[in-house]
Image (cartoon, rainbow, N blue to C red; front, side, top):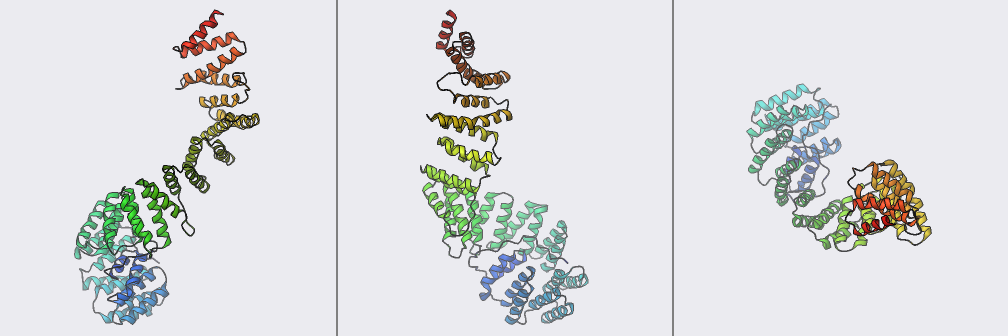
Length: 541
């Protein structure tokens, strides 16, 4: 058993629809291109004012049928017959439900009842063919052929015949043949929206430029049709042509027949195209519209926040963010939401609050490297080494710490110790830092910065400057530099080593060793007059 092929993907149920000037007919257009949920909204909103209620109920029945709710479909067809017993298509709908339920003879009676109401009607023949097609294409192949043959015989120019054939080829994924049938349909009826849109959907696979030009031609003939404006906007959006998508979404937005849910896409495109004032205006409209559901309003607040930050309206952004992050109900926030909020707060000098926002972001997204790195940077710049060390300790405990995280962790321990006069604190931090540095050196034996960090840890054991407690660490650094002389920072590391080693040996009375290191130091810093004088004095001793 097969389900009739629909080219357009069915959308999620929409939240709201702006009052439709054309009435229920637009709903029929949406149904025919497979957008069932949108079609249902339009038809239901316009049912009381429909010029042909029987027709409106028929298409509501068709939507329910394709959604698999046969009982609801039958109830709509029944209402259609009650509205106008001479409108034949609702009998076809009843027949389709009956056929789907396995009563072939009962369905045939209903189809014949419909045929008695209008003679040699090609559109009715295609509707009956569809009913058989939806039920089972293989079982009812003979009946399908009979109805399509009749449709062509009675009106060879009827676009519905060619659309039926195109849909069948589309189901089989024979895209070229499908396009050919749709092309015949709109050649016979240039303003036929269904065939043009379906042809464009097929051409997405064959010839995207032709798809767009075909819709452009159609819009020129039906310039106020919201569906065509929307299809063009979506096609350009899918091709990443933001400027063109924005142009057609703008036309669609100005059309009174547009869906409110699509205003969010328009606002997004405005923001992407740096038209932030207009984006804020559209978002405000969504938020203020009482017909909008809370989800739309929530998302509009998000886009408004982003747009206000993009236009550097920091006061407005913070006000929007305050409302957004206190939005009623259970809401899902994105990393970017926190980042924009924190940026706005920081721009207003509310640094502590900005840090708090980042901390909340990290609580919610502990695996997000971007948030983590930003928070590490904030703690580092704010010299908040206690918070920095705790954050990084958590990564180590979870097995998620990178070598860079380990480096920052050992550095934070060193800074805490260096800022304290308490020997106990210094010892605690040294004890924590040493195994971290040892692991770094094991992981990256050629990274000289790790060996330099090791000397900082060793210096924490000194009770006075150059007392020699860090000699072993400095010698290890010197050996590492000797082994990596090509390192771009080798000279700086040598100078760093020679300064400590020469002064330490001098303090220990090891004059010859001190002199050798002073001379090595002078070789890499020949313009250091004070150092030169010192070396000359040592030579004279």
